[in-house]
Each structure stands twice: as C-alpha cells, then as structure tokens.
Image 1 (cartoon, rainbow, N blue to C red):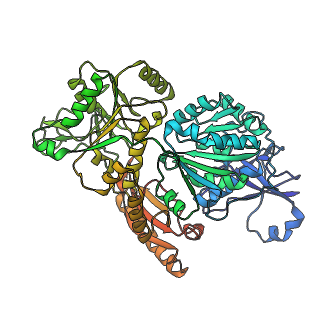
Image 2 (cartoon, rainbow, N blue to C red; image 1 turned 120 degrees about the horizontal axis):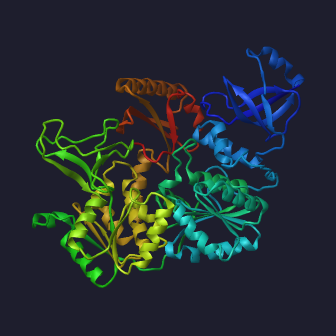
Length: 637
C-alpha cells in the first residue's frame, strides 16, 4: 500500500492545503495522472510523490480523517515535467493562487486530449544567473517598431550560433504574426497564441520539445512551452497592459519572464519605444543595461490650445489647425490617423431638461451611446445593450442629447461631413472583433493610396504594418481621466507608440497646455518626468519600490460589502501590529471601487503595499476565501 500526494487540477481556495493525500496499491511516478474524488466530484490530479504506507503509520494513526483511494489511473507515464511543476509552484506562491489552477495554466490546452508523451527536461545541471529580485545578464533596447528586427538580428544570430533556442514574447497576436512572417523566412520558427487550433498548437509544441524549433514567437502562453535549450528571451513592449493576465492566476508576464530566464539560464532582452519608470530605475541602478538604438528624428509635434479655438467661435471637435492639416495632407494623397480615446458615438446620453444621465442598471457607469450599426446604449462593463429611449424617465422630456468625450463614431461623422470624398475607416475593438476582420482591414489599407483612419488603442497592434503621415489627437485630456498613479507615464508611452507610425507631424489638442507631460512628449526627454515620479512613488510606497496587492469583496448588498471591508481592514491592521510588519506592509483604508457597482455587485477594495523582500503569504493567509486577491494589479481603482 502506498500514500500518494497529488495536486488536484481544481480551483481549491489558496488558504486550504494544495496537496492532498490518497492511497493506492502500488507506487506511481512523479508526474503521473490519476483521478480522485473531492467531495462528490471526480477531478484529475497530478502525482507529486509516492511513499510506502508503513513509513507513515504514526501519522495515519494520529490523523482525524480517513484516507480515500484514488479512483483510477489516467496515465502511469509521467506527463508533467519538473519545469512545469516549478513554474506552477512559483505562480501559486507569488500570486497566491490555487496550485491546481496554476498547474492547469502551465499545461498545454491539448493536455490529455491526445497521446502526449513529453520528453522530461533535466535541469539538474542548470546554472542560475539570476538571484532574488535582480535582473542580471539583461538589457533594454530602445527601438522603433519598424527597426526592431534589424536591431535584434545580432542577438538572434549569436544565440543560434550557440545552438540555443530563442523565445520572442509579444502582447498581441497581430504583432506575433508580423515577426513570424519575417523570421520564418530565415529560421525554423513556430508561433503560439490562444487563437491557433489544437492541432497547430501540438505541432508547435512538438517542434519546441524536439529542439527543431529555433525561434518561438507568441503571446504570454508561449512562456510555458517545453524548451530544450533556451538561450534568449526577447520581450516586445514590456509595459503593455496585455501582459497582465485577467484570469486566475493573475500573473504579470514580465515577472514570469524573469523566472523563466532563471530556470533556463537564458539572457533577457526587453525591446521598447521608451523605458517605463521601473526599467528607468533599474537602468539607473545598473541592474538593466540600457541600449539606445533609436536614430530617427522625432516628428514635428504641435500643441493646440482648444480654449482659444472655442473662445473664437469654433465648436468643432477639430481645431482649425488640425482641420487644415488634414485637408492639406489628403490633397497630397497622404494618410491620416485620428487617435480616438473612446469607442462609439459619445460617452453618455443625457436629458437637456433635468440633466438625467442614462446609466447601466447593473453597473454604476453611464451607458455609451452608439449610432452604428443601430442606435443603442451599451454598457462596457457587463455588455448590456438597450435601445435609445424616446424620452427621459425622470422628467418625461424628449430633449435628449449626447454628452461627454466624442467617440470614434462621432469623429467619423464629422470627418465625413468635412471631407465627403475621402475614405474614412475605423479601427477599434467594436468594429474589428477578430483576426479575420483585422487581416481584411490590413489588406484594404494597403490598397488605398490616401485615407483617414480613426483608431483607438487597438491601432497600436498595427504599428508594425502601417505608416501615417499625419496623426491628430482631438482630446489629450480624455487620456488622463482616471486618477491612477501611472496616468502620466502611460500617456507618455502611448504617444511614443504613435511615433512608431512614422508621422511627419502630430497635432495634439488640449484644454491644458502648460504641464510637464506635454514638455516630455515634445522633447522625448523622460528623465525629468521619471525622476519626479520616482520621488513621489518612493514616498508613498508605490512600484517599483513596493508591490501592490488589491483585495476585493463583491456583494449584491452595498452595506454587506462595506461591512466586510471594514472588518477585514481592522483584522489586517491588528495582524500587522501583532506580527510587527509595520516596516514591510502598509494598508490603505477600504473604499468603494472606482466603478462601485459591477454586474449587479457592489465592490469594495483594500490595497496593500508590500516591500519586495516580504513574503506575501505571511499577510495574505489572513484573507478569507470569499475575497478576490490580485497581486500586481493593472489598477488599484
């Protein structure tokens, strides 16, 4: 008789034991797959260890529960490698997520659906270049999108000469396809992302596992591939929000990349238009080597004061300068990009009579007004769609009008009115919903000699494929409406991405012309902005000086959410004092989420600020299982 320790591939609360014990008649190797019973349901589990029962007789006698027998063996052959165990354990420990869900994330989507017999990776002789939080043997390369392949060619050739594999991680599928189309012409290259079918995924997986694949290109899923001799990891646009997973485990791709580099003793190369604050500090501390390969001149950037235009009688979305520039560039058969901060027609619909704002009944946000393809009000939180009413429910007035920031639909209406003979196209996630539509858009743009494109942030995925001669930003102020500590840094990095389209000129419209961020945008000299940011972040315990953790509680009852948040806050304050964590942990008092009501639930947040050398489980073990835990969140709002 043997006692088996297993990891159930199930969503167990992180506060409960993640390894469960069962008995079986014979020994099973580590990595074997079995079926076990938890409660009243059967789930798959991965064997961690097998030990003769007689070695644990004393423990079994003292235990207050009776061991169950495993239901069946699914695969006696080990199907989970030591590397996969290591990554899953790291994800569980660093993001306080159920170990079984972390293991499920690491395993390929075709796991157990075909005869999978991966070659187990032997890492016993691996040498680790990284230690603690340091990022040694890594560098940041500043490069424009069109120049990236040229600038990383030497690193690629050097790594391939050493007979080692290369992993190129990108934030979006369209960017993965761009690199694949270029690099596959010269090297044995595979691609991995969430939209390829299981057959393609398996083929790529097998080529990586056999060592036939020289270059692996993919989104964050590619990090879990079975590399045989990984020598270099390249991360494109490391500050991109898409690198933060929205599903449990809510890991940060850049943090995981550093762990993968440590496991495989691989070099790290981050490629970006400009460093973010974290990378800037690392380069200052010489933990990250900064290589500036940008040689092209910056575009002409002009700031338009919209207060002057409005006071002189211009009620248009566009300043006279931007309108005249669009006209001039179109007459010269050139291409124009209008960068829109919003989808739809406008951010809200209001009653002119009583100022009533139409809001989502399930979420505490105004409904977005859309007029195409049909007049409707849409909630971007819960996807609720309503027809536009013919009167105000508050005062019965029929005087309803759009309000707030103009969206891409309203911008398109105005452009069609001003330039009736011009092709005006829209690129946002409401219009372009899948890869096929994106490819059709690219093909259409290649056929047009001159056009105006209205693009939201989705257009950044096309910065490798498209060029624009003129870029206009109708309302810069709408890009910084959220009171987040990263707002100015994010705005600067977005403008830097717009420069990837190689425009001759950028016109920025704003109501506030005198601020430091505009000076930074024009000059591209981020040092002054970042130095001020670092002083503030250090003082208030924000990254990169501390790790943020967002704790969230949601209930249909607002009073219950507020009560639970207050109770947990007091419990954590007491724990911090009793455990003497004051120098390592700070707690922000509970508050409603920035969008308090979401999908019918009222959300309250508690923010923890943790020093980098502190073990987060020492404080998170006090969090009840009905709270959501987000380590390194996209936003603390």
